[in-house]
Length: 46
Image (tube, rainbow, N blue to C red; front, top):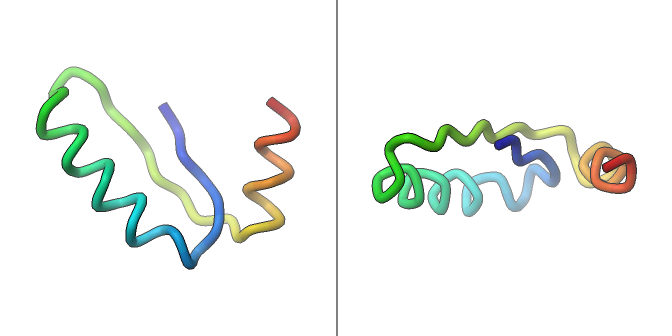
């Protein structure tokens, strides 16, 4: 699973992912920062 988007939300997203992965060790989540516009473009692209 990949999460990408706004740099302002990154710290919150990273903390949530850490908690999620602690409870779901077999699922790996990658968190990226491409900015609001870049994340929105990726979201719209699917």
